[in-house]
Image 1 (cartoon, rainbow, N blue to C red):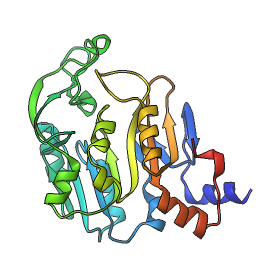
Image 2: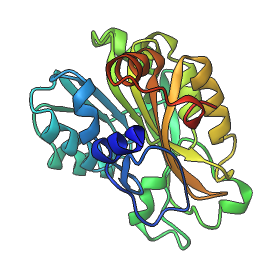
Image 3: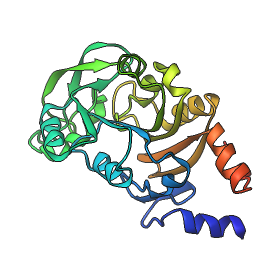
Image 4: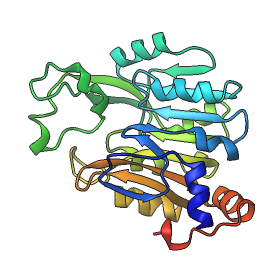
Length: 259
């Protein structure tokens, strides 16, 4: 009873979901309620979002942490980047880059929907090509974009830790995480889109990402998803989980959240 009561106080409620694991962390699909993170993050966190699009989540983070050391938003789509630049302000830093498992140039497959004339679908663009069955639904331009490895970029920009890392990469999440072991060791919270269907060629499914993160000492805290489709997951470092949930609150979540 005590555990459930505290979760009701700490986490926001969620409506109209198909499946949910863990605690009620989300306000709705695609938008994470960051308020609950305030209590165990510093007043000046470092926040990195890849696939920021027009920047609603970065703006939201800036409102919650006005004294944040750095809020960094990556967006490789030129149209979305222009909108991101127009929408954001200090302390948000914006970069026209894609995160990848190598440095250089990559191909961005813009998604303009079924007929190829719906730019509103661009949030589902990816460095991965559509799978054969999805090509008809993911029509759109194919453009070159600059890409970087997160580890290398962080080293060059004097970032040695990340408090919140949010990845909206349409299937490339695992490769980006695997290619950046150094910064991953010093990351507290990871928020990422999860996939259960191969919308794109070689995209990683949720279970592969989960297996990698658990082996990398992260705890699955919450996961909203539609069966056979996609969702969003929140993972927290085992160190922070132990310090806050176990030692501070005296709560052992046991089998509820661990795989």
